[in-house]
Length: 121
Image (tube, rainbow, N blue to C red; front, side, top):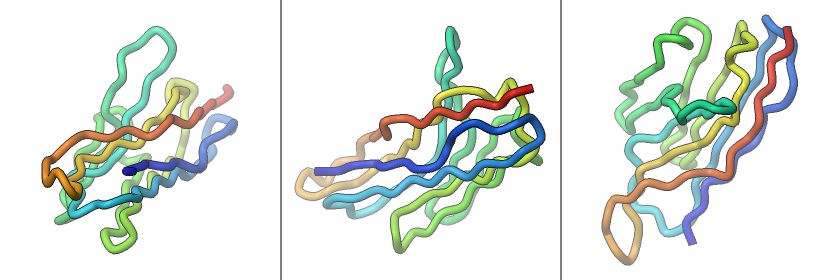
């Protein structure tokens, strides 16, 4: 059973920092890419940041210079360091990974359960 388990999140004042972590488990052969999306109330889910297994990153313009994504390929984990948080960063943050798994040997998208990030002004 493949799972993405998130940790971190919570309530922080504007200008503060939070750290999100996500661990993938199960019969995983490869992960590419892995990253984070978010969904604010009444809005569509949007990309925050992703990283390929080779280290190539992709950030939303709104978080560039404030958020940093990192991966540990050996541990199948991804971390999002969020700095200089703004009220508009308030959303449910979802871990996402495209996984190649046993026994199907097919690539498929998986999602975590989501973690709430609330930034107060």
